[in-house]
Length: 500
Image (cartoon, rainbow, N blue to C red; front, side):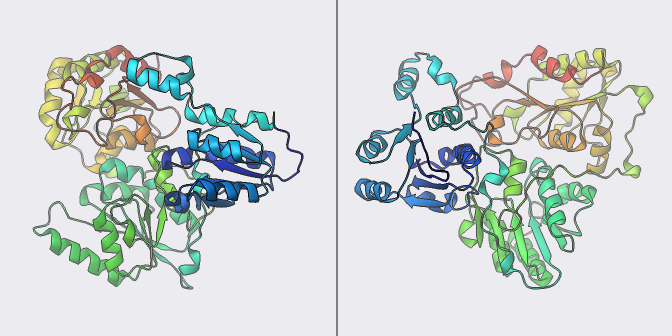
């Protein structure tokens, strides 16, 4: 037990690398700040992470690790009342040994890790998450951990409002990625409108995703990027850049981590350009926000407003109902469950026979047909599933709905089962309980259905995730991530939202 008598102590945390591990220290600093509100909290990190930790809402100062002896001098001259070693390597242990400050340390259990990796020797010590180990290190200081993982407000320092000229603002949101990415950008757009109520916000997106932003009712204007269909990609880039330059925008918020988006904003002369530090065009940004896989994609996107907004919490905005796109069924048809079985990536497709058995069970449970949705390219795949499931159990609208029609078809459902894809996020945004069937991707990538009442069904395999978005074929050749998922597992997750 390390007794700290000061009302506002000075504490140094040692966590030299890497970015993910540093992000995980946020609950530690949050707990320390809750115990001692006016304490001085510093962190010892490698120089390449100084910019990232400068965004922390809890860290007062970052001490760069430029060598053993300079770090030791910084510790012994810093007037610290305690050091918390969250690195636990021979180097950090030596620093602790030669420092004149009381030290507490987290248990890394390196030996147990090596035995498991090299010889598959299991150990109860490996069942704890690294974050839990970090928080346990606080107990010798008499600090009761504040439970919870990394949160949106942990990394929100560095306002950029000073760069704005007086008067009404013109803001631009560039998101030209896939449908799911656009749906997960809606809370960011909602927060942007709340934080700057008088601002005019233009969204740059692809024609096939423009309907999502239009349905939110939050975009003052939508500029379509026809990069996939224009005869010349360069000509389309020049056209968009010229339109953005003519728009006289004060700031661009860029969730899309592409060089093209950042370059477009830069060449358009937009003075404030906010994007992720991992963006391919990060050198062209004026404000870079750390990108963390430890947050849901909704929260990652909201974090882009941290240079502009203090309180970043936001919910999904409502997607406005389109009376002209009413669903082609009524309450009397008892269409209560829906599925999205297709994907542009073959490895994201659960086997057709499994989908068919699931549809039959959902139809029996709900007492009506099961809605099937998908794009025109998925018509053949869904037709085979419909044949196996029995046409009497299916309402197959594959390739027959507009974006507005897709939303209105999903809106009245009681549950929606989908692979890791855009329609899954539409269901979550509409408040329809969504069940994600995840194979090559994992929920840790941050794209699971957002919000309470949603679920992910997946098989724990060491080879997952094998790709960020999926792939044409299984890199290992066995496709076990999908083949091992049982109909019972998926049905059990979906049935919880269906009336008996």
